[in-house]
Image (tube, rainbow, N blue to C red; front, side, top):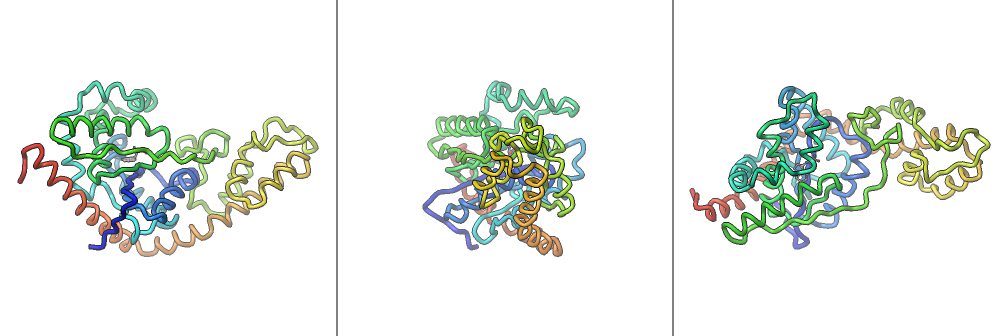
Length: 333
Ligand code: TRP
């Protein structure tokens, strides 16, 4: 099996398949994942379907289809299955075994005091997530990372408490059974600001997202509704580009954004015009991604085959780790 090994170190990250990806994921995470892949790290990128089940278990019907959609998004945004191991969590059963073993040694208060847990319990009140599995979410996440003995985990700041717990769990395992797991470090790249069309953080649940697979018409319609500079009441007023969501995008995708900034500051360009330009630029930017997506979409079976292959590769690494774990805890088979 051709598994790229590299002395740069191992990277693992994952996303939950709860819906199609939007451009916040592209600029915030995927671009970074691709960079690490291209710089020669040994990368493992996972579609965390068990994690999705922890909040969607009452309504799991979409998880499989979302897994497929995310696989399309991953590959069309440049993750390369020949360079990175792209896999589905539930296809690598070793994650469940390590999760089980770790769950024996994780004190419940560590989980109960986790700020992400507390916040989600409050926010997702319409769903019954007072479950064993949801409380144990970070233990499974620790297993995801430790099973590859990954050194680096590219994540957003919201995931930091989980990574801290992963380190604590690794330390406790190492203390009890012998030094085995490296303590993984976060790779926080400064995530560019990618606001949603209403200016809040882009999120599917806020209904303010532009999806990677949106049609040109959908993109034009969404961009035309975007909030711009709240302080600029009239076309003749000078603008405040640094306080404008549209300008946040133009910084990301327009080569001449400096020039646009000057035009805005001098009221040489209006918001309507600026949004029109931006919509066309975004459409152009997404065009190669969408083209690739459409091609891949034609052969669903091939996409599944690719992630099955990726999962086999992941499994072979995970199985090696598990051999050591079983030995250390005295349950060698
Ligand atoms: N909890 C992460 C999220 O919601 C997804 C995830 C699962 C993950 N396992 C992981 C991220 C391991 C990094 C490493 O975004």
